[in-house]
Image (tube, rainbow, N blue to C red; front, side, top):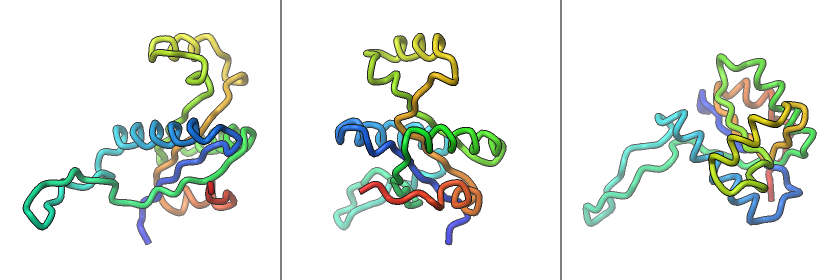
Length: 137
């Protein structure tokens, strides 16, 4: 069992394309914050290099809007040991990173809706926070 666990949690009520995009954005951001999770490039049988991929499984779990809000609050209490990435519904209404930043800056925390979260940290802590969530299927 790995000492590090990473999970992505997404609201299953979102349209399929938004779910896929949410997973991609969260994983990319997690890779930026935790570059050691991405393995080295690997050679194939002909010696060509293949770009390294994640070295740990990243299950995608389902979490309702209220569960995402509660999970975010709970995870923030462990900010020294967990990496938390969040994606808000502001991405559905904005067309650029600048617009997204402006909308976030103008939105009170209580009014932010989450499309998904990514958590990474000690396996025991991540399981404690997400163990009751099922796989997104």
